[in-house]
Image (cartoon, rainbow over all chains, first blue to last red; front, side, top):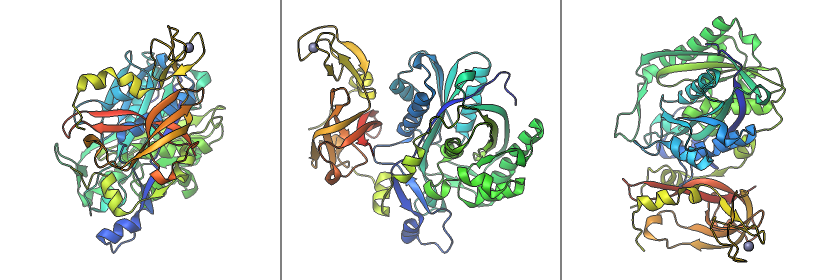
Length: 345
Length: 134
Ligand SMILES: [Zn+2]
């Protein structure tokens, strides 16, 4: 997909809670003969959820952009862990940001992919001329059954992007997008169930790698680009190994992946994962660099998006580095309370 | 104390709870939170609606160890009077901090957090809290 006019990112924000649990602490409780998939992961505080994290990231994106609130025409929230089964998060976020009532607001769900799809749809609304600016958010407080191998990685975080058609404001231009989806039953949660289930045989080759590689190759073929044309590549990061292996399969070097690879420190933040990685890359990028972002959501699909930075990149940075360095470690008992595994009253 | 579930109350108060909307007195220049019609310092009317700065410092605080029933499970937590840059004072919970780490004069910044759930199937109330600014 190529957008019919110049559209890109005018501001971005990322949020990671202060609490962490080490994978070794999870292993202490449940035991594990295998190497842990991450070193540690982020844990939301008792008063945090996917909505509050989304708000923090979105406020930062809006402030960085300098865009007037009255000119934000959309709030698209991608998440698989909204606090309500029925009642949108987007309206609360829009209200708290002072964007109501004249705004398109919607919650979107596609496992870990909804954040990048929100970005593509916001870009479409902007490129069509329907709105001037829109907020695209990926946010999750990922849930895993206690003792499940997903518990090592199910993290919490959010990232938000102010998508705009105002050329002077853009710090990165959205060059191309390519979506690649199939019906693949690798991971699901039924209505009313607390924890997701997953089919191990599907989590690798037919799910993650097939879609990531399909979307990345599709974009590069359509755009006439090759791996060496990119300065950075950010993949969805359910652990540390998968993105590095996907890079190898596609012909990217580890140096292109590592700046945006955060799963070892914060775990898998689901719909936020590739977008927090992109925020890390934008914080470090120089003008006129090309970035490839490829999300993956179970069910399954990937969005590949290529961006080129402008002279504006790096003038303002997100608070991500500060949030990554501010850490309070919790033990499994406190973690269980924070995640709602232990319930009071 | 037992909290009465009230959806209309939460709806009415949402702007004040979600955003730091204060009033600036046209006569004496005082800034107050939340916004109101009459200046508590000089009695003038027509306070201007202003969005207040998100940074401030703790003026005084208390640790809640025996909370009202709707906050059970959250204790111990800290309620503080925060003086924002510009002078407005806000009564709010502190978060991301242990009670023993709180000090008068501590620099804090506003965040948006869950305040309470009226019941497991009731609505969730959100609002401004403050966390250490470092
Ligand atoms: Zn006055």
